Amino acid sequence: MVPWLRSGIFRKTLFFILMVALVPLSVLGGLTLRSTGEAGAEATARSREALDAKSAEALELRASETARAAIGAPYSSSDSIGGQLHLSHSKPPSSF
Image 1: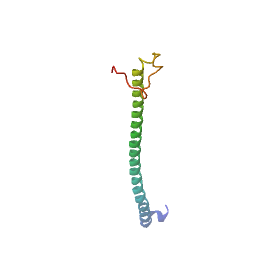
Image 2 (image 1 turned 90 degrees about the vertical axis):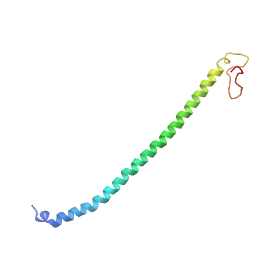
Image 3 (image 1 turned 180 degrees about the vertical axis):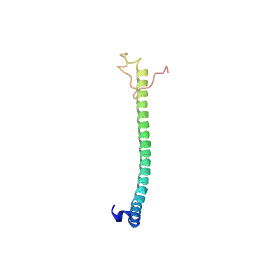
Image 4 (image 1 turned 30 degrees about the horizontal axis):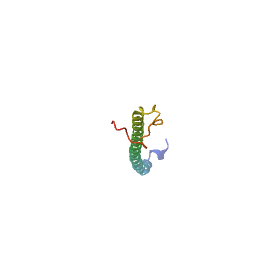
């Protein structure tokens, strides 16, 4: 074996070079993992809020369509009203 591989100075120098390189690398890796976790949590929260808003909007639309269908159903076949009842332009029937 080559004599300089067995010397103590070479081993110590190699050890210190590796330590000088690996310590900052591990610190940067830890910071990156932490910030990635925070970004993921923030993205999850934002997407959850957007999906909640979108589902609430869809439920509102479906409820209003159901209400229009329920209130307009008795009047849709009537010729005197002229078709389907539009809630935005008329008052609800007084029997309710």
